[in-house]
Image (cartoon, rainbow, N blue to C red; front, side, top):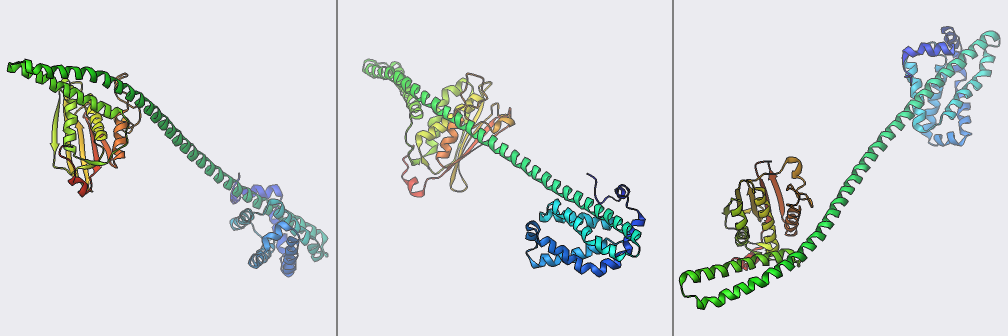
Length: 432
């Protein structure tokens, strides 16, 4: 749309309307007449506005009425200005924008221009009755000028209205994008929830399988242990007794592993009791010793004297086992080192660190490792549930778990768990 205040377009407007400098000079001759009749004309204009509900509603406040009377008198006298310049155009544009701002529809303010011509027609004819030809030319010039004013005000009204519509469209588009993002987030949350539900079902199946497997293994282990115990009185040489004791020790070790497997697989209500983490970590690492030896993984322990935590020993052991297995699996090609640290930390917490020298995690995958079924292992070698379970256990204990990793340079899992209250620590059994 053409800018109503563009002076370069003014000549085209004036040419189209046939508004010549001579017309402006003729209108200037009418100024004394307009000044003399201004008060009566403005009053008639005001009474006309009051006769319509749409315009009457805009004139309820006295201050609005006073501003209207002043502005209309000024406008009436401006019709006799002998020039049309940038200030004149800006004033007409302001009028059009004001109409749009107060909600005055074009039909009403276009009607106002027609009303002015109707009121001025008899007045100017009487004033120039001595020269009817000149009076007719003044009226023609007045009509052209009123049409120019109406044209500029109308374009300004439309421009402002279109600007408001464009703004509303932008706001609507922004709201739509925001809604799409929220819907996308909800959809992602739903997918995560669905995956977790499937994970829970899979864990339930694993629990059933583990319980059955433990039972099947437990029975022959009990038989082997019983026969080894029965053979001890019959074996006299030291070498033979050592071998029987080795059999019994290894059977006991298998039994502890089976029990740990059952503890992980069997759902139970979480208990809250003081747990000494150093002994629990040692037990967990002993479970992993065979696998670590097979993959040439060396363990470095850095345990400082640390207060106990209030929690569930079985679940914490499952947490440590999952992190240990995850670390060993990351180092299965070429071996490496697993550093396990335990120390008191700030804010009455205990800090545990599992740091490996394995393959690490790529930056784009680091934020996904706690998602259900996400795994960097080849198909068939991981189910993506170990770290999900680990994070859940930490959360159940009121703790936090963080991970740092650089691809090819290993990963570090940092866990903070709240210490047990002082009285509860005193009751913690040794080696619990």
